[in-house]
Length: 313
Image (cartoon, rainbow, N blue to C red):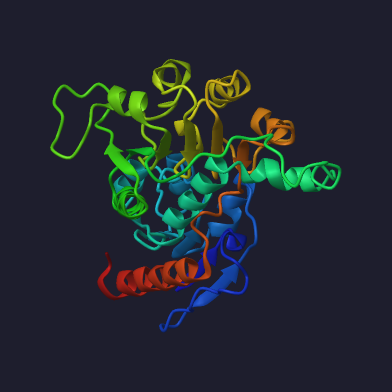
């Protein structure tokens, strides 16, 4: 059984994926470009990948391929319909980041509500050292307790963030689907959540209906002075609309762990803005990546492979 791992640097090097117990040949590449996929996966029975694109055209040229094991939850890099037609099983991993992502979101909330980035940057330029008073008040400081948290997406991550937020004294609102004609129990109308939320955090899947969910029109519905957090998928947010809302002062802050294109291109408008805006916090798609979460992830990937070889599904 030939196994090819196409983008091994998607997993920290100090946490290797457990090797299968059955006889196999293991080949590993740190990165694989679109032009290299067919050549490298040509003879593979099993491919392991995080973000390499598998279109119908690519999979049609891989006649030996039986399993695509994804080292992530998202499967939007694989044409699932085509995979099914071609008899290729696709297995992803869910639930591994249910601690680390909520913790990352809470860290972002505190960082923005307490303007931690602004205070930190000041110390690089001696702002405090040169101040005649024992402290100064250049940035807003707002309590997290008592604020309203709007959550878009009520899966495992959304529910856990809501649970922790309530323990911290926040009021939690779960948004119904945009445009829904009926409101389910436990949900609030989408537009009402935007209007009431001091903090809006995104945890919905990326679909045709959620692409650019946060855009110029929906941002205009948000409470003035709100902050936006996106640890879901980059294309959920219109980057230009977000930047305009930040620079105009309509949003008081934003924290993002995901971008439309990853890694972002040099000169990306948000990356450039982060160099000058202390209320724009960017992390490089690592909200999921605590050691415990990654260990759980790779063990589940190994389990997916073992189960497939044992059962064929």
